[in-house]
Length: 397
Ligand code: DNO
Image (tube, rainbow, N blue to C red; front, side, top):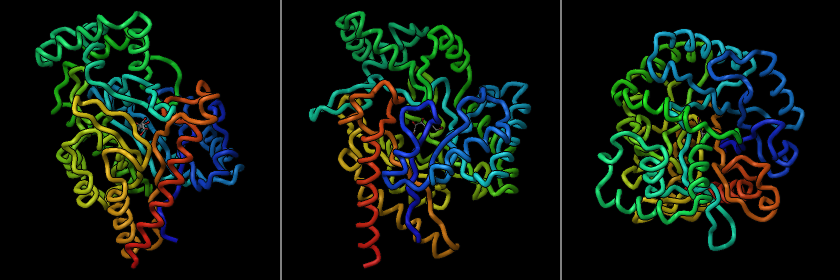
């Protein structure tokens, strides 16, 4: 069977979605991580095994790790980075010993994805995640109060952001701050604003080139080990794929992907193709990215976005939005078929990325992490599965 492998993200037993429910919606593999190990420490074999056993007891397989996060010493290029790289390699060894060989990670600074509204009401009554550049600018200028931030924005944006911010009630201002500082998947803890400020100042001193060099340094150290272990590394793109709060992006477009793939040319140095992250910028040609880097795609996140003229976007349902999910799916299925002919059995793991909050999700919204509802993602998976079958049929003729 050569279809994409249907996977679903699960954040562990404390998370509001149970494995037995995930099993019912036709999922084959779980995307999980050892959530409770502090950043930078080795994931102990026993912890990995326990999680794996839980997943298997539910009749599922642990297909992908998302994410083994990269320590800031590595991202910032600090003197102790080699120690954290050693730990990272040991974690990969422990995962490989348990036959878990696809690892997603990212090289984003400060926060994982950035959104300005985690509960954006859609016309049909469901809610979605949204990014509004004006709200982000207001946060930057008037909450974070970044030094010289004004220089990064057009005068008209500063004026509009100021008007917008003044019109907000204090509850709305708090909600904006909390939405941005909640940008860590798998946690309900908000990032502390002061801590954010301190790290932010530090990051702003590092240039884009330095960040890219730090990524290349990391890859050159870990990829030879990943090759030996048969582990496929799959970097997740920066989300959104443009600079926020003055912080440079290094995994957000064709050129940056090309840089990271060529600085360490190995099939084990690959990508998580995330349609929603890359697709939030009109400058990204997603089909070109799939065509050119297809053989390095080890993991797929599918999600649509609805982009607007003011630069804002919200996470649209999986098949309807600005992106043509039909074309994206076709390009991915073609890649997978090609690979299947060259190699033996190849099933690229695919998961529906974030889902809307709707139906029963609305009764238990507080049990989920933002973006990771049950019904919303289940519908996404069903739609994508149907789309894949149709596309495949059309390609076979
Ligand atoms: C999913 C997002 C991100 C992603 C990490 C990967 O696409 O929710 O949180 O999982 O950035 O490291």
